Amino acid sequence: MTGAPPPAPFPGERPYRADEGHLFFGREREAGDVAALWLRSPLTVVHGPAGAGLSSLLAAGVLPRLRGERGTVAHVAPLVMPADHPSGALTGPTPDEYALIRGWAPHLRAEAAAETSLGRALAGPPRPPRLLLAVDQAENAVRARTTGALRELLGETARRHPTARLLLAVRSEHLAPLLGALPGAPATYRLPPLRPGPAAAALAAAVAATGVRRIAPAAVAALAGRFGRRNDAPVPGSLVQDVAHGLWDAWPPGEPAAGPDTFAGPGPVRWAAAGIWRAVCRTAALHDREPADLVAALAADPGPERLGDAVAATLTDRHLLADGALAGPALTAPLRLLARSADEREPYVPSAADWLDDAAHARATGSPDLAAHAALRALTAADRPVDRLTAELLLGDLARDGGRYADAEARYRQAAQSAETLGRRALVGALLTAVGRLRLASGDSPGAARLLHAATDRTPGVRAPREDLERLFAAGRAVRRAT
Image 1 (tube, helix red, strand yellow):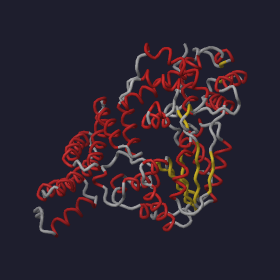
Image 2 (tube, helix red, strand yellow):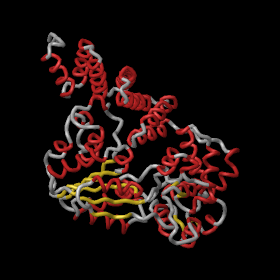
Image 3 (tube, helix red, strand yellow):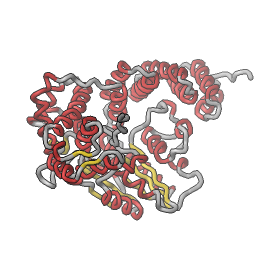
Image 4 (cartoon, helix red, strand yellow):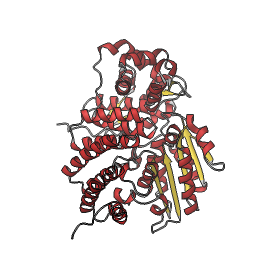
């Protein structure tokens, strides 16, 4: 009797993680080049087109190589604030600084990271001889117009840790404004897009890494031909993942090897079309558009003039577009298939996790209205308490950032109730601190004091609510509790 097939050795829509280096193939030379440059250069900028796999390269290609370097500690931080602490309760760092602290000082808990600075977070012992720090998705600073703040954070890090080696990963379309905001002349490295041959070989190597399935050499060549007729044609990583998952799910039971016939028929186009359809449906839902209309535009004229700048930006983020055109010629056949069948296809319905990812990304790229729309949809779609908590926390942050303090207070209070139900006392304390500060800003000192007292009860080791209370006491605006 044949057992269940092993899990697919592909991450799908998300990038590879650092613990998946054993499944990451096709970028060995580039990973070595970037690791060497990072080790020797005070400041390095790595750039590539959408879909080239910058995040995966850093996490699963470069970091595993550096683990063997004696005395070297390397961390990568995406420039996206994690939704694990309300920005209204940050005491030391800004949201971007908090994101870097969480990535570069992973030993710190969220409540500790929220009341320190980047310099102090990196100052604790032991101090490694070589400290390598990377900012992933640095284009978010360009899109959110916060490159000046990022420059200050990097400058402060360099002053406090003069031997640290800094690296920024950015999409090529945002390279020029980022370089213009950085000091000096950093070393640069361009990550080219995947090509058909290496893309097919990488897929085959991941299959072989399972030890139970393999793709015959002749089939690898056939797959490369489906990825592109020209050897230099760009192949977006998302397309490789779509084909890989389709192949894995369609693998005949009991067959250890896939031959050339596997890729000779319509299978690869159908598998790619299924993944593209999910991406298009998510984009359509995010921007209140019809999926069939977006498919028609992509198949005919994918420029921002027809799609609109916001939709084109999201489709670029989903690796369907690059530099205002299709991210690779291999997308053409699946898009034509979708254009013929879009009206008959069932729309993909985004999950709460999809909406939360979109909300966090939109917030990081300076699109608060789009982020709020996605967070509200996440709240509607959520069937897990943790997803509802995350959505309410994000909505509270967005309302506070927009100056809608009554809305922010209501969202934070709802998030605190969810966190209480989940037993996350530290987060409850942070949310109560955020609400207390909002009460204080509205002139309600007694209400603020009650909330800050409640926060200290839940998180007695956290300084923020205690220090807020001490300022109230010193100003005569609150009375100490009897003990």
